[in-house]
Amino acid sequence: MKVLVTGFEPFGSNKINPTEKIIDSLANEELEGISIITNVLPVVFKKADEILANLLAEHKPDIAIHLGLAAGRSSISLERVAINLMDARIPDNENFQPKDEQLRKDGETAYLSKLPIKEIVNELRKEGIPSVVSNTAGLYVCNEVMYLSLYHSAKFGFPAKTGFIHVPYLPEQVVEKFLTNGQNIPCLPLDLQVKAVKIAIQKTLKL
Ligand code: PCA
Image (cartoon, rainbow, N blue to C red):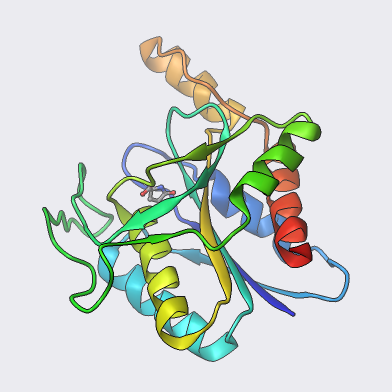
């Protein structure tokens, strides 16, 4: 069983992306009977598209779990839906800022997550980790990656199960924002974020 887990590099005003750290810690993990392929994607619309396509073609994963930072959210968010649209509030890391542009002309308007999102949310809550189903992954590079993974799944049959999880800031990021401009923003420690992703993988493997 092959599981692809992707995160993202920092972007915008965020100097750290927690998902990069989650990927680092998963890369050193042995989970029973599965091989985990990890990758940190650039926050660049065109490059993320190309790199994801190459990863899927090369590894043919059974499961793909894509991770991104959702600045300001308080919980682990299991995204329900990806939309066939790019409408960027801020430019990407190579200064591209698409507005109202389709991702794939031959794709559906939207795809629903193929992860067992409600089962994962329930399991995380049982473990004391705040978690919700989210009905929007935004219209930036995270939505793009979720959409393209589901488009690939619909077109080629793999990854059979794929979806997206947004994570909150890490505590150190919030301390910095509080000290620099008094913003009071929610966060979740790295160990709980890593635990949440492992639970999501295990739950997806079982169902
Ligand atoms: N979050 C952004 C892109 C990269 C990331 O970690 C998003 O929500 O689209």
